[in-house]
Length: 59
Length: 472
Image 1 (cartoon, rainbow over the protein chains, first blue to last red):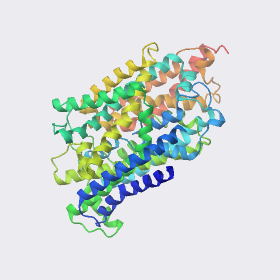
Image 2 (image 1 turned 120 degrees about the vertical axis):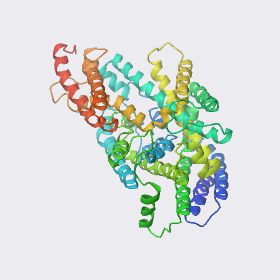
Image 3 (image 1 turned 30 degrees about the horizontal axis):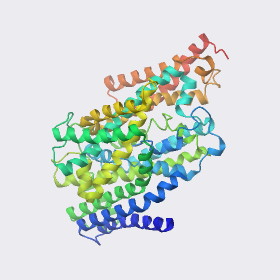
Image 4 (image 1 turned 30 degrees about the vertical axis):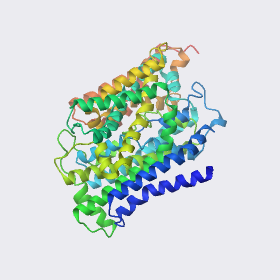
């Protein structure tokens, strides 16, 4: 489970930065879409990274 | 800007009055992560734009920051870390051995006050995010005082929440800050990507090479020229010295002795590069990009407001980044300031002292002057704490060679080492006179000031230690 959470959290970071990079290179032109993708990636990051990283710090 | 949330974890309240034992030493990776997270904070969203407001050109900004940050890393590597890994003591214990308890208490007071105002600027940053939602008038670049009831209420609410959390203990927020850190770094990067694209679209410039990009940066983004009203004009040297000395208290001021006492090797000081080039290069340039775009759209819109800037680039994620960046960095700062003040009255409740400290930071945050003049404030903060770094450096490396006693307060049983006190206060007086009457700007007095403090400490020790021989 932890491995899955870790993988999903890392993918969410990719999902966070990729839309803005695609916007930079002109592959995506709608900034509102970019903003929504970033919100979704943010939610996924905090939901998946928190259980993993919180426990890591305790250990 | 450094906030030490991770440093707190590294120091963790352990081994406060003893050298860190070998089993507690940490590897290189710990320091990379710690510095990268610590120096990507809410205040970066103020500092980047303020470089633009100060009229820094593209060359000044990019090359000045590359050089200034390199000098900062070298300062950590060759000034701070070697002493940290040899003595393995906290800054405060090392200072106490040299200066005596009373002088350290004075240092704590100064440190606490500086932290308080810095936390105020972080509260200001977070409060600008509320302005996007609630649409109250927010302060302009040259505003000194609160300009609306809405602004005062927003700062009060943010400051109160941060203070209450800090009073209950910073550890939970510190954990949350660690989780937010990689996300926050990428949101800053996204600010830069979006800002750059917006510039390319707004100017219609075709970008086919790095040369085209540099040309866009020079001619449209950071054109240089005069500073905006109320700001000091920044040249290449201003940017370089600011990049070098904005964390002066931590490297040549030796605050990070508390961090490097855990390092296996002194070259781990190079890990500070992660913080410098992520936070003080990428994040500053990304934030500067957003502000330059705002000026490009409307040259009269000179307000430096991280909330609206971030919202324009990244929507809700941007706003969240501003709030979290301000909150996670103000929280430990208020906590540390509270601890420093509590040292003055050890019997008082830490909870109440931290709440009172938070209240002071909140009131400070209501005055936009601190945030809008953050470049000056950060320079002042480093300057005030820097002389003690010179005292530690001399005490460790030179005192024995000069036939003088190191750790004099400990060995003589003194509570106030006059030589260190004179070195600190006289250096600050000289720096003040240089700024006030010799026309030298505050960004440049710290370098000569460090040498002045070192020389004063040696000279006064020569007389002082001759008169009062240590008992041991």
